[in-house]
Length: 227
View 1 (tube, rainbow, N blue to C red):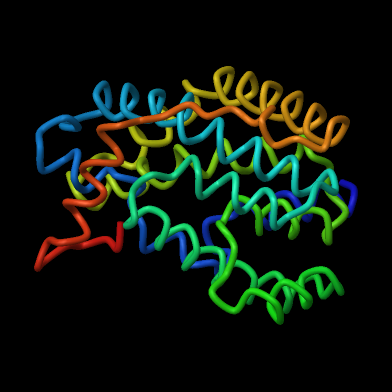
View 2: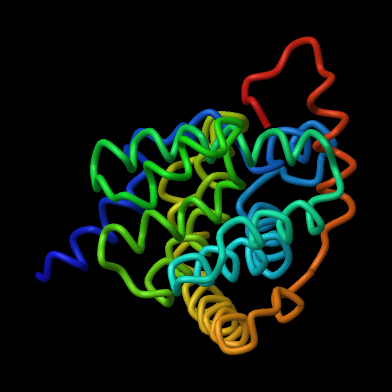
């Protein structure tokens, strides 16, 4: 196995210390509302998230890995994240990922981001920069971002519903083709951004219900997950 492929596995591993384990990707609010109550509804939730916020995240990560301006990409991520709670979460996860990335794959670009943007960049942008430092391709990191979009809710559902982990894993396996398609679409968008210098080529797929429930979830006095 190549070093590059090993780096991709490490970056996509849920045990990588980037803080994702504390976030449900909107699943906690969906469980309380009754929109996730078992494997079938979990699969539907993950599929919807994958084709909206997942596509956007994958494209941002791929563009950052391709060498596009990370600060322009961060502004584009802000414009595509209307909810303050989700913007705060994205930057918090970006800071945590940057800390782990600088320790694992030290690179001048990562150190420069830490010095110039102490509040952090959006997590998908940092993910792309991390992948670039690790020697990965834009398509590699698009796949990692797509997987992260669905693995967080699936993992959270195991804890929130006492869902059988085998069922949660089967949900992820059933989404493999969709994740591949999203990664390919995201990579094509990143190539367009790199060729033109315009972030207008990034997808802007939205999930209004996720935005609304994320803001509500942030105000809950008691919650199991941070988001």
